[in-house]
Structures are given as C-alpha cells and as structure tokens.
Image: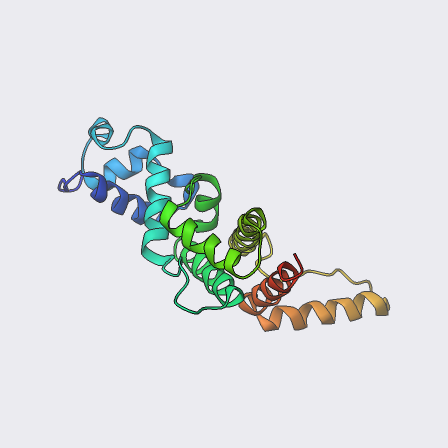
Length: 204
C-alpha cells in the first residue's frame, strides 16, 4: 500500500478523479480510491456517506473546475449565452473519462439558485415566459449531455458506419456523405445541432 495521503473530502474527490481517468466510471470504487490514498476503505466514510455521495461530489468538482461559463455577462444576447453555456458544459464533461455518464447519472439535480436566477432572468427579459425559459435550459443541457455521452461511449466512435453492397449506388452515396460528416468532426456536428436547437427556441 502506498504512503498514506490526507483523507479529507477534497483529497478523496481528487483521488476519485485520478481513478476515474485511469479506470473509467465502472472502475471507480471506494476500494480503489482508498488504495490510491493508501488508507483502508472505512476511513473514507468519515468524509463521504456512500458511493452515491462520492459520485455527486466528483460530478460537482468536474463542473466547478471546467464548466466555467454558467452565468450571462452584461448585455449578452440570450442566444449567445445559451451557446456559450452549452459549450462550457460540453468541455467539462469531455475533460474527464466518462464525464458525460458521470454528469448524467450523478450530476446535481438542483441548480445553483443564484445561477438559475441569472439564467432564467436573461431569457425572461428577452420575451420568454418563465416556464419556457426553464424548458429552454433543460432542452439545451439534455442535448449537450446526450451529444457528449454518445461521443464518449459510441461503439464506433464518432463515425457513421454505412454497410454497402457492391453496386449499391444509393448506399455508397450515403457512405460517402457519412465520411464527409465524420471528417468535419464532432465539434462541428455538435455546433450544427446546437445552432438548430437555439434557432428553434427563438420560435417559442
């Protein structure tokens, strides 16, 4: 066992991020974290109540470190903020292995009140009803999480695989289109979908 490290909550979360990056979400266990810290597993329960509590803390840490664009700036258009916020959330999830799965399964169920007020107020000042403002943020966050989740877990990576029989011109054409889309990359794919979603929200 390695030389014991400090075992306060912050150290446990930091060790959990190290284990997550090395072994993924399925390999993130209290036992693995205890081994990383050089302590016995029961020592962790002085600082975390359960694995669910630990995962929530790790999800919060990922968002705190990398999801930095959570509130609008002065005179910012709501469309620009929604896009900036979505890109920030995407960046946070892609910063760690299985980050999208982590946020989807253990991320905060309740938003920061201060952030939520700033976000919804921007849309309400722009003509959204309060309910539509909340629904707009839900739609964008779900799209962002889903896109990141697919990028991190897709069996074939980000490629669209089109099986084509010899002489099947339509399938061959579709395969060519798929390769063109793949060449544009996942960031371009995300941008197209996000732009379309935000334009659609402008019709509410």
